[in-house]
Amino acid sequence: MSTTSLPQETPDAAGSAGTQAAPVGGAAPNPAPTPGPRHPGAPVGPADVEPAPAPAPGGKRPVVTEPLSTEFGRIDAQGDVFVADGEAERLIGGYPDGVPEDPFALYTRRFADLEATVSLFEERLAQLSPKDIDQTLQTLRQAVAEPAAIGDLPALRARVEELAERAEQRKAEARAERRAAKEHAMAERTALVERAEAVVAQDPDRTHWKQSGQTLRDLLEEWKTLQRRGPRLEKSTEDELWKRFSGARSVFDRHRRQYFSALDQKQGEAKRLKEGLIAEAESLQNSTDWGRTSAAYRDLMDRWKAAPRASRKEDDALWARFRAAQQVFFDARRAKDEAVDSEYQENLTAKEALLAEAEALLPLRDLEDAKRRLRSVQDRWDEVGRVPSADVSRIEGRMRAVEDAVRAAEEREWNRSNPETKARAEGMLGQLEEQVAQLRAEVEAAEAAGDTAQAADLRDALTTKQAWLDQIRSSMA
View 1 (cartoon, helix red, strand yellow):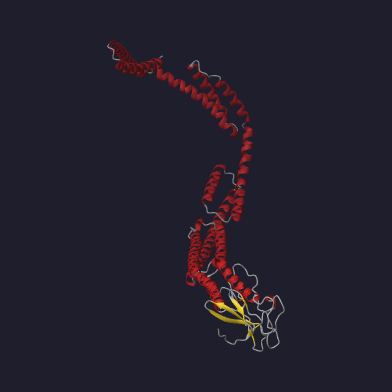
View 2: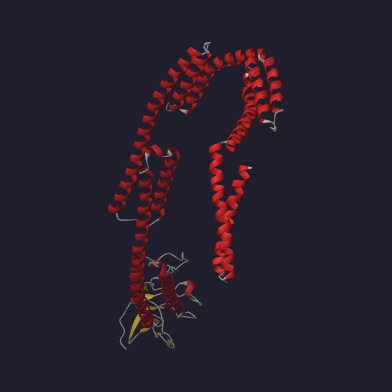
């Protein structure tokens, strides 16, 4: 086999187990970098593939007494290293200053490093983005094109191409996942905007401004979080959603300013109105026209309740002034009533004695005698006069109970002795007696004929008529 004269390559110390041979020219080349540990999610890059060492410059080569070979490589008598790359053979390096004890170690390690890099890509494929997949595949294809390594290179290239086919499927899945993530992010942003617009759509008169304002601030923070952590939307879409969200916040702020401006105006008007009511109340507080002034204060209270409210702090202060003005009048009236009531205390004692005399008539035994004695009590009752206002309802109520009892007894007696009522009752009594007698005869006839159903119906009718008859007899008695 003919060989092409190429510069020779000297292995580094890490790949040689014996004496290191120096390249032609005297100075040893820098050792090839070895891939270090990588984060599991990072793409495989050029640093993951160990570059082939540069061949040493040409020069006089020592003679190898016996050629060396492995399954995929060999070293000839001049110390040149070849790799079997499919059907061809390539010169990949050499030992110009002598062959070390394990001359294939450097090149097989490089092949193992390439295999490890391919395996690493295979493991990370599911986590890589389409861009990282393309960059890594490009790097791997360059690395396995003509590497200075000894091993089954065609199989390694086939493995890379097989991974490339799987990578295409993974890129399609990644694109679908990204589309789904964008759709989800779009739905989240849209829902957030709609929640903000729902807050703004509330009736300003029913809006809880502090709570709704906090809701919009929370939604803004949620928007920022989605922007930082979620997938980016198309600029036009995100701008349109932000325009809606920002517009909703602006409308909310405008509504809030308008509401509180109108509220301030309304509360100012309420304050002026209530201060007018206070002035009227204060003008009446020293009046001694008790009845007319009491009615005026009732009217002022009705107007106060109908008036709109000022701010809570001001409304409480206004109410305190209004109440204080009324209190002056009502305290004076109460003092007057207490003085009058002390004068009427003896009247209360006299009326309580009359009450005891009237209540002794119950229960009624002789209606005419009870009526006569009650009239005597009533005459003396009127002569006694007024009692303290606190006792009026109690005293009058007890007397009214006695009067009602006598009146009810009188009405019962009238109903019982009324000739017209009595005649009507006696006529109905006679009719019912005839109907009862007839029903009894019919029941006996039905029973004698064996007609139990008709006998039962007639007996029910007889029971009803008999009850009416007994009631009328009782009332007449």
